[in-house]
Image 1 (cartoon, protein in one colour):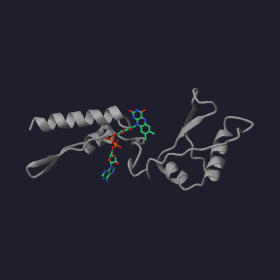
Image 2 (cartoon, rainbow, N blue to C red):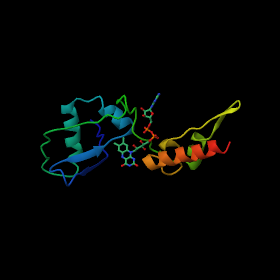
Image 3 (cartoon, helix red, strand yellow):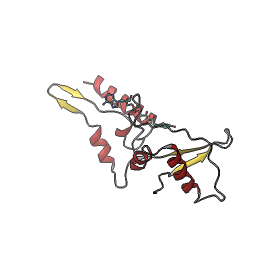
Image 4 (cartoon, rainbow, N blue to C red):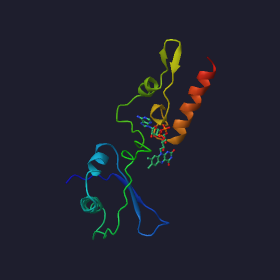
Length: 132
Ligand SMILES: Cc1cc2nc3c(=O)[nH]c(=O)nc-3n(C[C@H](O)[C@H](O)[C@H](O)COP(=O)(O)OP(=O)(O)OC[C@H]3O[C@@H](n4cnc5c(N)ncnc54)[C@H](O)[C@@H]3O)c2cc1C
């Protein structure tokens, strides 16, 4: 079974709690596993670092992609992605006499993935719209 867990940390303020983030195709694959398959996958990941393996007693999973109020997490730039890609994503679209601005974290040239990147693209677009 491939290991899907890539990033995680222990939360010092919550005894014996560890948080893991999974993205991309790994997240899609993980979303199809039941909780015992998930626990087995996590144990195999942990086996790279600790021995004996800890006993996993409870797993809570958030699936941002399938959450109807969220519909996704945040973007990741793959190796080779250039600033020009983000510039193209947020370039204004002229439709006749009207303009459409594309904003959000995925369109920020370097603060993609973050709320403040999303915010900045909104401020930039609103500023540009007010100048017209
Ligand atoms: C687990 C997690 C932890 C995070 N931690 C941090 C953090 O610590 N710091 C930080 O800065 N950022 C963090 N982020 C990222 C931050 O939440 C995002 O960068 C930010 O929310 C992006 O804002 P946005 O407006 O671009 O997109 P979103 O907030 O994703 O808004 C997009 C909206 O569009 C809606 N939508 C999608 N498709 C459609 C459609 N077809 N029709 C209509 N509506 C649609 C969605 O429901 C959503 O409401 C985290 C994200 C996650 C998932």
